[in-house]
Image 1 (cartoon, rainbow, N blue to C red):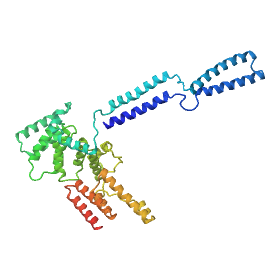
Image 2 (cartoon, helix red, strand yellow):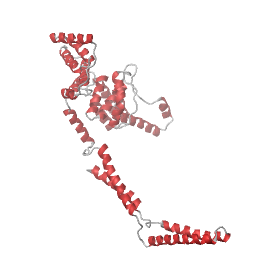
Image 3 (tube, helix red, strand yellow):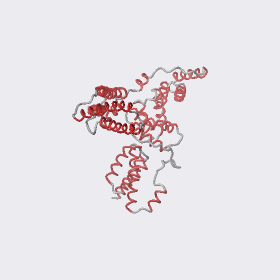
Image 4 (cartoon, one colour):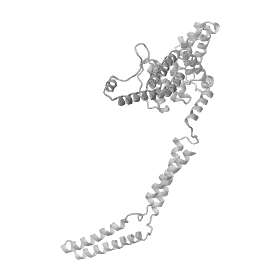
Length: 415
């Protein structure tokens, strides 16, 4: 309701200003235009007398011109007298134009909003939008429903010999459902044919036949087949598989790509952008999920309200994410600064790191660096808040949690 009140008031004010410009009476302020005309005509009479005296204008022409100028002087004087006495000037056409202008502004604004706006959409604060996203995530369609909504795709042309071999494989696996190798091959070839539903069903049988802990890559393969079968939609079934895989391999790029995609689909592009930004930094360059993220992250950043700057994928030689720090130029410049200026420069670097981690996320080492730096600067409470946030970010990643705990201990020791 507040939006409509504000929009309506602004529209009416703008229409009112435009109407006032058209309806403004000439006697409102300053002299009327007729006063200027009156001075011009009187000057013309003086110039006419001089022209007659010099012989430029004949007496007959002078008399005719004098009569015409006098007539104009009388008309201008009448207008000046009317303006001075407050007599209104004729402005009928201006009233019509003002009314049409007001209708155009008000009606055009309403029509434009109806076309590109969201009539009936309520005012939602951040907490409300997050709650709606969580509700959408809980109630979103399952795998079967998502597949049922997809349009029928055309049947691709398949080599008859290859088709015959796949048919024989289907028959063989149906006769021997406990043949793990057969189920694995069937899943692979069904996926090549674009039969993703049949592929994930065969892959599910292959996973069920595994002994001991299931390889996380198998779970991610299964989730990927679910996503492909649903036309790019990450269903609750696919999400469960991804979470199961990430609990064993938290840094897996392919699983993190699909989790970021899920966040965007349920209305949390902020979390999706964080996941993708962290995954890009981890690399490796050229990985299929890196190329997919690079193609989609600008749109995700726009939805998240982040001013996106391209992130270079990659890491250090040992595979750990690169840890950005002050450049050589910055280090040299700090040597020439006073203690106060050096402190301000350090504060700026720490604030920049905190902002980037809040918007884009980062590696455990970067979160640990921020916690330690805040402790050195004496901002203990903020460091503790950052530590609690980082624990949530890297829940289930024991190595990351150990690194963060070490940074917390250093921070506490700096008091």
